[in-house]
Image (cartoon, rainbow, N blue to C red; front, side):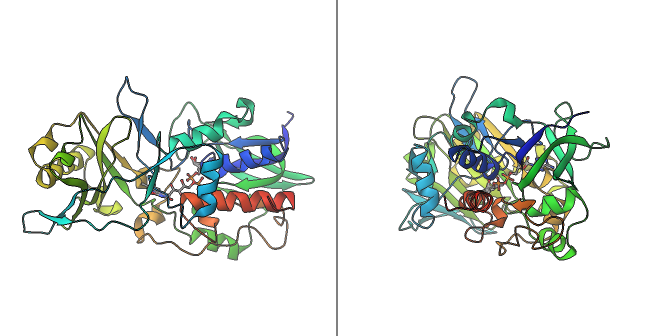
Length: 377
Ligand SMILES: Cc1cc2nc3c(=O)[nH]c(=O)nc-3n(C[C@H](O)[C@H](O)[C@H](O)COP(=O)(O)OP(=O)(O)OC[C@H]3O[C@@H](n4cnc5c(N)ncnc54)[C@H](O)[C@@H]3O)c2cc1C
């Protein structure tokens, strides 16, 4: 059997993988293949449509970016011609303390508001994927092993498109392609946990990648869709803080061109959520929105719960057990041995500047491509 050969294989079609492919193509390197386990691109960027007839999307993953603190990322979005708007913050914030009725407080407004993308974060990854020739993007292809052979790396795995979201199909991996170099565009902990390296990675590198928590992997997001942003008419911003839960923070998720919604981060730990059914959690979130925003909050058009801790292509068991924190980026590659110059980590957690953030995915991917091409981009 002949194995397809590429100059570069990119594992993962989240923001980092798609950015790397985009930058490579911009610099004339078309000889690369992107392998993605899920049946969709975007990774932690995930959206849901307002309804069957409206194309607008709400975010179930990342929502915000901060161009004044992340100027290179702001410029990247600008160059891609993606319009932005400021997070809605006008109005009072609701504060809920245990054992007390909710209070309305003047919200603090940030000097630089958090920014959102028109068309949701999907606009970003869809834009990057649009120019990627379909033959160079293999969705539903899970990478399981990397083997160094004379003249390159054999990328081993399986086409799992018919067994969606399966973390571990017990099918022996087969060669998916061979490449001179492999860009690992996924969280370091997923690499350490799910990919077998032959020969093994240096133990210090393996431990450093395993110890790097995946940002937001332990979290779950709830989204409630409404006909109108009714809270604004009551002088409320849609923001709330709660010590009672299950949501600890709520924000206005409405879209400027139609589609009203509130979203919240669930404060119940990932471990505890495994003991609660989705139906129970949804009912508790609905009841909380009624407490916070009044009876109109009961009239929702749709609701969604996305538990990232249960998603095997984002989280591992280790992510459920520790408090999430932004850790310093681990080394991106092996300094010596068989893996030197063969693999490079470019997922967001490898960004020295913004590990775990969207800006980090673009930073790490840019650094990786720069290192491969041996020149500044
Ligand atoms: C709920 C939530 C809210 C967030 N909010 C924000 C925010 O407001 N602002 C912000 O800056 N950041 C936020 N983040 C973080 C942001 O989403 C990430 O920094 C960014 O999306 C990471 O991109 P990535 O490409 O590095 O990784 P990922 O998006 O995780 O992409 C990795 C890709 O690799 C694929 N993959 C995994 N295993 C394999 C395998 N074995 N074989 C092949 N493919 C594989 C995955 O399916 C995925 O597509 C949030 C994240 C979450 C979950």
